[in-house]
Image (cartoon, rainbow, N blue to C red; front, side, top):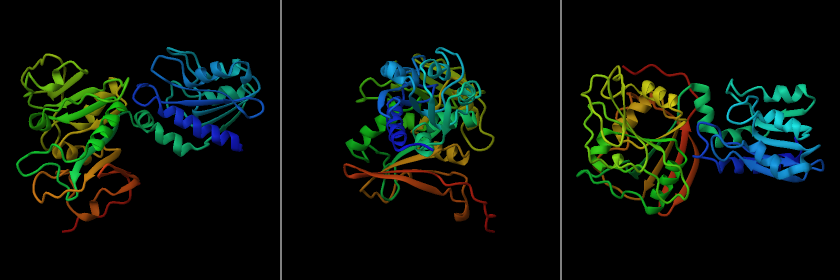
Length: 369
């Protein structure tokens, strides 16, 4: 059973892991704390970038000889494979670690097995300590490994009556500067930022990260089924990489400053096939997507059950008319509403940021006649 010192070390390791958000993809974020033989912190580290040393290696280097006879507390099962770096399970053994406590098992078949290797070598191994908290900070990578598609976070801004734009189409700015700054944090933590052609025409968004020192720019993705993107669109300015997804039967288009990919159209309704899009992005190493599109695109993703988290920025304002935050999502009766569980409510300046995830699946009632 984990000790109090190990539980405190795991909390620290989870906080360390979060420092890698937006910097490690397609790898997970991982934190590690090394306790010496007396249970005192000897070293700590986190996975800082893909291709660089893993969290365990950073922590072992910091601990030095104090690691011998000690305990490694890690947010994810130590890896068991050699890629751009060596297996962390072997590094722990070489350093003389006698006990390993990890939070979440590695679902990646190529890297899993570290716990078994450690145990076979006589190392005491314990799993599951603060697993929910560790999984939450690594939710994007874990989702992508388990389902073979990127984690999708839908972000929207709206008035208290659910309007994302006024009747004349204006939408800048519904929410405050504090909320807008927080959106740049979400962008910095994401591998890709995605909008549809409607948002592109209406707002000409830039979609790059600003105000986040040292942030890696995410891939800007535009769903443009009819290949109508304007050559002077801001997403083509070269600030960040851009991918334009068009329909298989769309006219030939080669926008300067972007790559183009052709995808099948949706089986029903306008637009492109959402699972095909997510499969394409996953194949490109995208593990997390920030969906910033308008109500139509958000509805298509929800209809495809392809939204893993919702972050809504609600401004204390009323419009009474104008575009809703969400359009048709294939829900025709209250019994089929997509129920969410609130995970956080935070005030940002005058606004509220509400974070929610889909509730566990319940039996779907038949539609009312």
